[in-house]
Amino acid sequence: MKAFVKTDVLKVGQRHFPSIGILVSLAIIMIIFGIITPKFFKLDTLAGILTITAELAVVCVPMALLLISGELDLSVGSNFAFAGVLGALLLNRQVNGLLTLVAVILFGILIGIINGLLTTKLRLPSFIVTLGSMFTLRGLLLVVTGGFPISFRGQNVLLWLLNGKLIGEIRMSFIWLVFVVVCFHFILNKTRHGNWSLGCGGNADVAQALGIPVSRVKLFNFLLVGAMAAFGGMLSFARFGMAYPTLGEGMELEAIASAVLGGCALTGGFGTIFGASLGALLIASLRVGLVLVGAPAYWYRAFIGIILIIGIVINKEVMRRLVGGGQ
Amino acid sequence: MKDGIVYPLLEIRNVKKAFGRVTALNGVSFDVQSGELVGLLGDNGAGKSTLIKLIMGIYEPDEGEILFQGKSLRGLSPGYRRKLGIETVPQGGAVVPYLDVARNFFLGREILKTRFLNILALSKMHEESARLIAETGIRLRSTYERVSFLSGGERQVISIARTLYFKGKLILLDEPTLNLSVKETDKLLEAITLVKNYNIGIIFVTHNVYHVFDIADKFVILNRGNLIGVYQKNDVTPNDLLTCIRTGNPI
Figure 1 (spheres, each protein chain N blue to C red):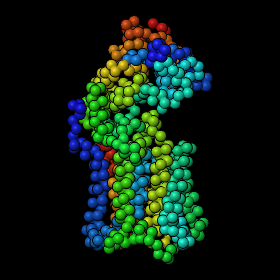
Figure 2 (figure 1 turned 45 degrees about the vertical axis):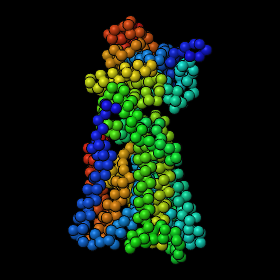
Figure 3 (figure 1 turned 45 degrees about the horizontal axis):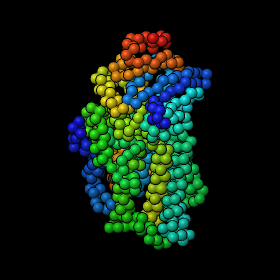
Figure 4 (figure 1 turned 90 degrees about the vertical axis):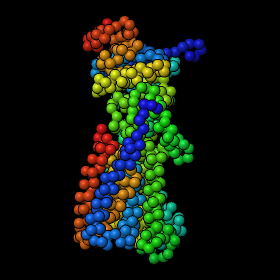
């Protein structure tokens, strides 16, 4: 034990500082919007940001875990939309709220398992597999809906539990956001599955050689992403009382962007759940902030692109300095 | 020991392996005893890596037998062989760069606080890894340090110390000194010598005779898949071995 100089600074710095890049970026963006329009810091605005954050974070947080294990899922946006439509269809047919939620999540799990099996058993790149399922699901969704939104006119306690108003403009999704972040933080940092995910993404060959069931670990993470994308879709449906077949378009990129902005290595093996959720908060702030300052709607995607590039530059620097990235 | 007979830790008996028309190993035989360090020497393409993969269980021999403590390893998976006590340390060490030392040390065989949700006993993992790495004589700043900050030699030591903890009986070191500085090589060789004292058999694969000569007990020389000779340390000099590797002729 004498051989070790246990320095707390090192311990704290290396474990928590990777999120500093996203914290700084978030603070800068919020301050800029706050200066341009004081409305940005009004409680209602912040509650709106939290609502958007929650719906994105329940998808981007499991996506972060999947990225950490060395894979990605582009089908989350389609899965998200399909879940909402499925939820609306079931509720319109008087299916019990809890059963509807279970059915929708099982559907999401099925998508996750298909993506995971195709990737791990056939050894195909997850980028291609999930790109395929993204188009397939979106196409099926348009077939089912005919391209029209499906509304739910009844009342159901499930919708309130998922995304009803809690206090003022703060919605129940905020509670779900906290719950999901805490759960996934725990999975990543305190459980064997988290350690194995980090190992698989860091070096799959070494992980395999050390006896880690790499395929099973990745499959489980695909399953989690599928389940949570479906849950996110239900949150969104619960907010609007309506399911749009076009919902979640581009969400796959926003989810990956949030995770990467939050410090996840695109190559796998490193990332934090806290950082990924801050990434979602940054994207939500940007979306609301741009509306408040009256920027043309077209600018939103351009800004996301610019912020992503800046974020990746910061991410790379953080990785190099604090995590020893690239070595 | 079985029926009063003491078996060598590892026996390689007339092992042959070919990949298509290319003969990678052509009738190689030697043995390794517990606490013995065998230098497996040969130039590129000699068949060293193939032999290591055969012992690990990645390939099966076409002919011949590999016995571990008197029992054939044929048909046993790499995972099962690891459970028997055969550990491999690949080039660069079996470590994952972004994980800290303790998490790397126990990767795949974590200490759990509870089976429910497989929650890690992180404090114990840090304590135990610190104790074992300190035993190899290597000084690390902290077990909380990410492996990406460690030198190549330190990374290998984590893998070697891991073998001690999990009571490995045979370590296969695949070119452990490749790309290491002189100082790092010295430190690593010290650690390997310490591990040997725990009565662990070691196969040290290298093409650098000078790195292994001082610490080895025996040398096995391969050339283009053929066994050139097995020599006890007292019978040879580094120059003899070097000439043997270069020419492919027995000493």
